[in-house]
Image (cartoon, rainbow, N blue to C red; front, side, top):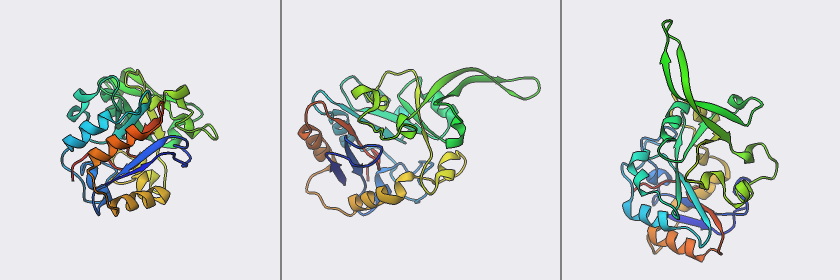
Length: 247
């Protein structure tokens, strides 16, 4: 099931188009069951190939299209290309994010306190253990904080002068998000399961509504039609909630 919104009025996505994706009657059905933030006990074991094909092509004319996935990046990385929807690999570990960022666009969720007064941090890429058993970092990747977290009134529509950071396929940095929502402590802890921000507040309402809706066409058909209907130059963020899994 796919919900489409031509013009988002949510704080972070204000002014762009967005979608929500869910299974029929189960909102987590398109998310990987292995996702650390998914504590529902439900989810998908495989990617929906037909939908992935359509998603990659669901780019507005002369526009920008991006999304995020918790499915392991090696399952879809070879499909990324210029002119296609940019899929960001979403992680909850700086080390895992750093390694993945060498292959695919990557984002990471961290605790808000980890930023301190800075808008950037470093994710360890390589390292070694010294004679005392201490980890010594030898290389790292820059993590850039989402500007909407510290700039009032800022949204995806304002990011990158029409080229949002998350919509850039070839980039040499990771985009960082602070864990938020009622379960943000779980979201920020790589060792604790749960913490999905989409399972609370208005996002949960929209996600539940998506799961309980009806549609005569497949998600693949609907996402392509939606992208084609948007004005030239539009920005669309796919899957404010949901993922690329098959039910």
